[in-house]
Length: 235
Image 1 (cartoon, rainbow, N blue to C red):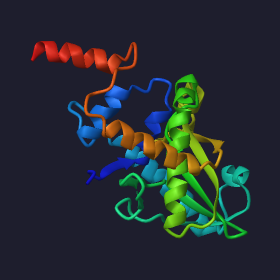
Image 2 (spheres, one colour):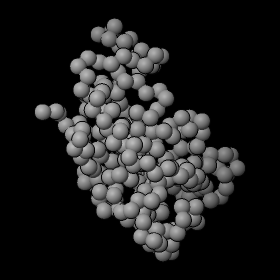
Image 3 (cartoon, helix red, strand yellow):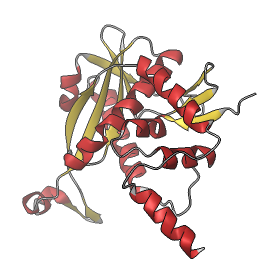
């Protein structure tokens, strides 16, 4: 009997990166992605949460989406996605629990759904290199979403919330208040092609890597593998 694998949509997305290293991925799977020395600043989660509140608040007050969402089509409202502990499916063929948690689910006038992920970042060459990971992540969200009742999912989108940090904006009166300052953000929408079937192919690849008896070969030039080798020399 195989061991059930648990993997998040974001971690599944690593398979799409040009920098993907089979050995690093195998190690993460074996460790349940509980790696040492990992620190993730909580401020990004706070900004994402605030973004959701801003968007939902606008819907509640104006009964329509903010203008910068018009590019996504005719949206009539939002739906609060289930808690991540319920937003998951099991791929029986590979015995893998696929989990996730989209930032937003919007309902269009025709009753179909748009699944969105917010990214607090400037769209840059660095972000462009991460697009394959994000595209897999969103398609996994879409696949899970349809199983959770958001059917049909017809659109996927990344929304980059880019902070305005230029000096001119910083010096505006609107940037200041009695107890601190405000930071403005511009929204940039990147639509993602809907390809849910590729998720099953990637899950089969996850099972294949996990079941290897020996660790796979590392990717040539993998910086993480080099750092791990240096660490092992010190132990």
